[in-house]
Image (cartoon, rainbow, N blue to C red; front, side, top):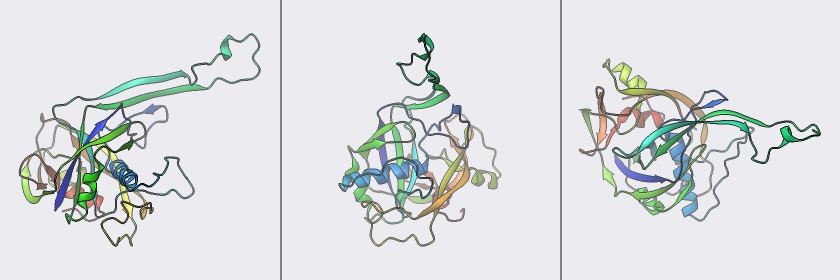
Length: 275
């Protein structure tokens, strides 16, 4: 298989809301989920093609999906090792508007106070590294044109593509190493390994429509066609945040150096069975 490493430069603090969760306590993932990253790249592709990108307003009746085609497997984006990365928790408690003066009026005409009651988490990272994997190298060159493009990323945040690697050929190998991405928790449980040093998160993947084929490497990426997605399927993942635990032994796609991508994650996101 073939891979691109894409480096992102966040321009501010970000929030990738953990769902399901509390309405009053907004928690964030300490990484960019695969579905969020896929939608981000799709919008950049539309910008590169000179198209208007879709807004982020929710349409509950018939929500459109704009993601990368199924053949491009976007694996999420993660903090670059050795660079600043943290989750900051703060409070949004009080009035929503800075010019709120209801309490100080002599005569109150029925205006009601509009409170914010949230506790909010922000993911702060100096740089993010991400991967896109596909069976064929054809079409990956389009991603290399996205350097310098940026847009909204997640519930809160903005990022710019700072660098895209040359096309990297990956080979399969069973290794005892820390993964470069999240790992489906089911894979770790099935292997009967003692695992430590990881955090556990609920995530979601696309439920691809059965008829989801495209005619060319550009279709569904550099156009404004809606992606053929029927919804989301939950899954549980493990995220190894440091090297203080026990690295798992897994079947990886690797470049022989720093890139070690669990094959089970690729199969899961593509809607295929575990390997």
